[in-house]
Length: 100
Image 1: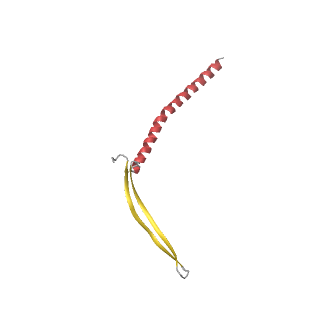
Image 2 (image 1 turned 90 degrees about the vertical axis):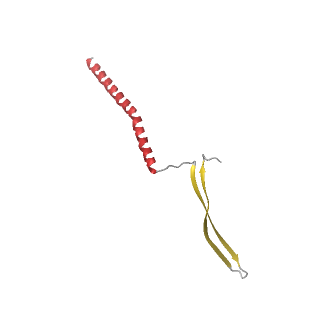
Image 3 (image 1 turned 30 degrees about the horizontal axis):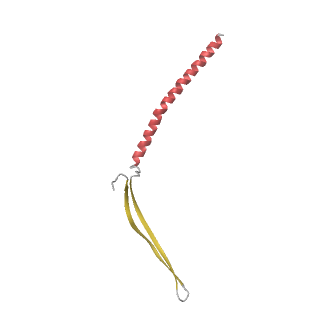
């Protein structure tokens, strides 16, 4: 009978040790997560200014080209290709906080 009480006591000690280790790991997860998020934020801040949807400047460029095909009186086809032309149409700044 004495053998069973020592075995039960040993099993109980292992269960308590397991519970202590598990609770320590669960508590530490918050500190590990916050440390990881802090390093991630530090890396993002070191990249530079982040995208802000309310403060965006865009440059709109329009490119156009034309091809003309003409048939002459003697039946020959003449193809004239004008090179592509780029022009800066407009630059606009979108500011969500600006008053119109």
